[in-house]
Picture 1 (cartoon, rainbow over the protein chains, first blue to last red):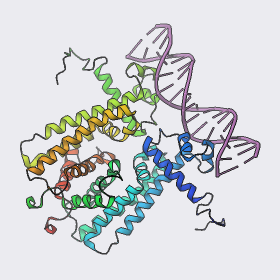
Picture 2 (cartoon, rainbow over the protein chains, first blue to last red):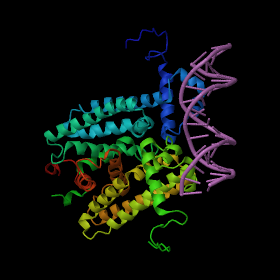
Picture 3 (cartoon, helix red, strand yellow):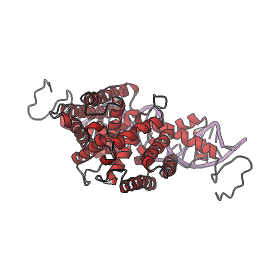
Picture 4 (cartoon, rainbow over the protein chains, first blue to last red):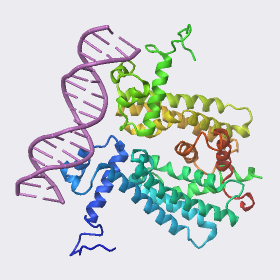
Length: 210
Length: 210
DNA sequence: GTCTATACTTCGATAGAC
DNA sequence: GTCTATCGAAGTATAGAC
């Protein structure tokens, strides 16, 4: 980074703020927004959770909406990075499964931020909404391009528009955040394997197919 | 239904209110809640949409949360009724597809109410949340029982826990409300056929299976 | 069943000391 | 970077006339 400030010991990458504090703020806000909804969450509750006064928040952020924008962009950047990395897996037969696992592990690890990004798009101003949507469209295009390639390579059926295969896959993955319990009987990776199987092979017994 | 009230001309089924007005209130509120989120929706906006004064709302409802409860319960009652009806379809090979179509057509017709019910559960008081959850669990059990029956009859693969097949199917169907456009290129029924195919047969080409 | 008027609370954000 | 104190606006809901 081209930060013009010199960092003696800690004090991180952001131009005018400490990285660790900023991250804690984002995580705490995302957890609150997920639990109560953005509109019903107050700056008072957030400052209480952080153990500081309400006014002290405004040293770190300019407005409540700034938090929502930062949460949305950060969660999208993370999932784009991990899924893009997974899509370059060597074994072509396992590309889809690797991608599904990458998506699910990232989305469930950052579940508060990710669900907030998905659900609270409507709470953003038109300008901020457009900015988040741009990144969201980029992620969707990434997934769609992989699916289209897999169709050309014969690993995904070609009789369904890749646009709808992508939407169906994202349906299958996104809603999981609503009910997944990290302390439940399955890890994110196990869940990913199960959902991969259902998406790729379907719910019908093989014997009945064809 | 076993409504004991006889309806002369209008004035519907509710004990202490006009059916048409109540329905319009519910629809308008659901549309507003979907667009802005429950917490960010104000009684002022709602009364403006209805063309009445803010105070006049309280002749029809006791509180803002009452509206959310009524919306959630109503949308669940409707989808339970239509999916239960579809599950008694004659042709056993088409039961799943009939159920998926019934779910999708109902959820997309009542999309404002249905999405509000799904997303704003967190905005309810503990008592009201429990009440909505009871009905939601009943719907999930209905779907799971059908899937389990289809497994016994050999129409659905039995090597995956019906609990997770149900969650996967509801993932696939529920998220559709977020992106479905009624003026788009496909009807709800066409979308249902496509999602049925993906759920039952999977995304892999048949040639590659087995 | 709708109105005007208002009570009471809480909100996001700012000012300025330390 | 955190504090105390406060501003001005907006929130839900109620009172009581018509």
